[in-house]
Structures are given as structure tokens and as C-alpha cells.
Image (tube, rainbow, N blue to C red; front, top):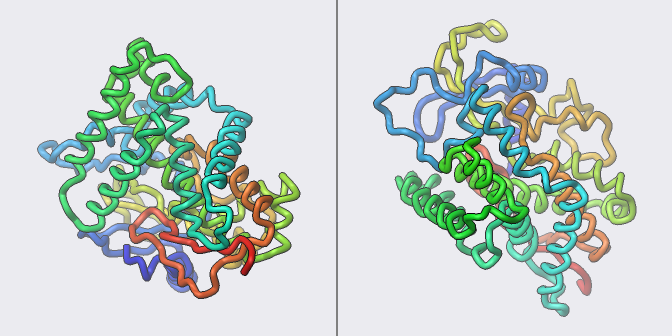
Length: 388
């Protein structure tokens, strides 16, 4: 979880995998132990393995229940997961690739228009990528843009609460749930194109209950905001270092699509999967896995597995075989917003490359990664856009 370690964490895990194999045990920062799966082949198979569950089979019945806001796709198994995922797919049906592209184009144009025209240096993360990702997520969900700052503040408080070990998550979740519930009640006719309105319609028709609708809306909002924002920052960091690649992204849609996929492979926004649990005792590559064991998939390390990606430890554009990367997962829990993230990120990065063909990274800035176990993102990225 340490911020300093995050800068080399994927390489460190890959090196461990090379010397000790694709299955490692590690001490969790919050206590206990878990398995870490690093190899691409094993990771890919486990993402679809019915012997793994998103719910611990050893969870005590008397243990506190997960807050209603977090009872969504990340903590359910089929058939419950299948039912919820179907409703989420319906809620996103309005957001075709063409609409996402138009939305992202409008947002990045307005975001760049707010920059000081005389400024030649600014922080891409705080001024462009994270605000743009937040506006995309809020628009898709159906959150009033005047409330963006409120959503960002809640997200920041949750992150700090997790890192500090402070038990404030339920308190913050109560605030978010009350806000989303109030938003639905305020728009009781469930009109509009936002996912929240669609989920409200499903709840009014008995296909979801109100709590499920709120949890799915929050999942879209929180996960879509952070992962897309981190992907955008990472993509500029990786692509702008090569002038030829940066200009190819600006000029060629296909090159931009391939470039985003290589960014996803090399530096995924989720370095590890969310945890899974063994439903039963079983053996994996001559190792005993016990019922209830926690298992993480090292998506970042799997994406650099040299048996799948030649010179996988290097960032290379163009690269063949990118369809095999695991950054959005695989199987029943594959990211439902993958298409949205791909189109929005390609659109925004391409617009940045066109607007700032000579964009350069600050050479005196040491990259600082946001601490955490699963998420991977840059805290800041100072850039020059001319005149330097």
C-alpha cells in the first residue's frame, strides 16, 4: 500500500514471479495473509473458475453486514450477480460508443477552454484528467454537475479513511446513500438518460429494490471515475515520452485505439483484482488452497508475463496480441464499463495530442503514486504545453 513502493510494485511482483513461480503468499497490510496469482495463464483461468467466490464461505453469520451501498457486483456471485449485471447493462444501453465519444469530446473541449491561455505548465491530473473523468461518470450516472465537488470530496474521504485505518466508511456511506436516495425521490418520474434514472425505473417495476439500485449507481460512479481518471493520466505519461507515438495518436484513430490498449496492459488502473475466496479445498500447481483462503489476481504482473507478451516489461507502441491483457478482468466479473472507459480515454487522449502536439513531461518531477492495495494512479503529472 506504500506510495513509494507503488512506483516499482508491478516490476517487483513480476521479478518475484520469475524466480518463485506464479503463486505467492503475502501478508495483508490490514492483517492476515492472502494468495497472489501472478502468471497470465493461471490468472486468466482463475478469473472464470467456479471454485472461487466474491463472498467468503467462512464469513461469520454474526459479523457486521456490508453497508447497503457496497452490496453490488463486486460482492455477489451468480445467479444474483447475473441479475444485477443485467439491470446495469440495461441502465447503460443509452450510452453507445458514439454518445460516449461526443460526451468526452465536449467535456475535454470545455475543460481545456478553462485553462489559462498563457499558461505553459500545469498539473494534468488536477486540472484535466480527474475532473474530466468525474464529469463523464456523473453525466452517465445522472448526477447534477453542480454536485461534482461533493462526489469528489466523498471519494477523497473514503480513500483517506481506508489508508488511515479510521472506521468512517459506514458514516460516509450513509451520507452518499442519503444523497442518492434523495436524488431519486426528487426525480420520481425516473425521466432522463442517466443510469440512475434507468435503475430507478427498474426498481419501480420490481426488477430491483431501491437499495440495489443505489448500490449499482454508486458502483458506476465511484469505479468509473477513478479508473478512467487514472488511465487518462497514465496514458499521457506513457505516450507523450515518445514524440512519434504522440503524433501518431493525434493523426490516426486506429493508432490511438492500439495505444490505449497498450497503456491498459502496461499500467492498469487496477493493479490487483478485488479479492476472491476459495469455496472449497483444492490444489493449484502443487499447492494446497484451503476453503476461505483469500486470493488476489496480480493484473499488472499478469499483463507483463513474457510467455504471453514478448518484452512484456517494456512499453511498446504498436504491440501485437493486446486482446489478451487482463486489465478489465475476464469471465462473469469482467468490467461492465470497459467499453465506456476505452472510448472516453481514446477520445480525450487523442484530443490532448491534437491540441498539444509538443506536450512534454516535466523532467524535474518525481512521479508520486497514490497509496493503496488495488488501485493504481498518479497523484500529479506536471506537463509543458509550449514555450519551454
